[in-house]
Image: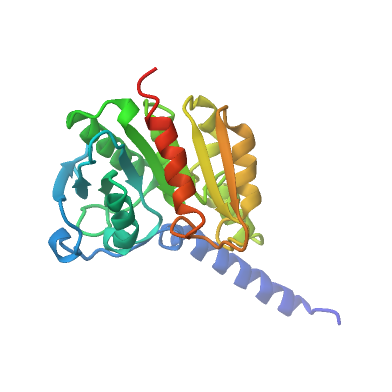
Length: 272
């Protein structure tokens, strides 16, 4: 069937409108913050503090802080693009049961924090969290940087400019623009996207043990994007594939203990 000139013009108009919408609303498609603040005392987690941290550009961030037991590490945690800290309570609880400390920042625009999300803003939020950990007396060999999904881009950026014992990445990606271009393949995403989170341009600067964990059936971030990032990373590095695993795999019974054992092996080494 041959399309008429009018039909082609209509299709072109629809394409242009859709592309314009993608460009204008791209940050709403990339971040899904729950802006409501849930007080830490209402979560059931014990032994923690709800902090207010100030960023260099004047935003005020909510953060949850739980000190570690004995010589266990402090996990500096960077969450994904949806929800709020309260959605990670079960995960934090498992860390705490293991004796780990946790310092988790609520990005700007998420759960009680001021501002709105952007790549440059989230990088400042990550920097603020790292400096808070250091100000509380944690030496780099006690700090594990951990990122999940979008948060892997923040964790990688911090690891590229600061020291830590190890870097743990759940569902990482070569770059956010790489992932977006797969989901929106009809559009010139690489030209339109502002917050590209180019982890591939930073990973080579990292000189600490790296663990990447990825579900084989992750339909949000393809595993091959993570594998390409892994190939760019320096040794020592480990890639843990989770058969049948989806986008979130850390809490799985056959994954969590392995990640913990790996982290403890890095932090027990002490400073080099």
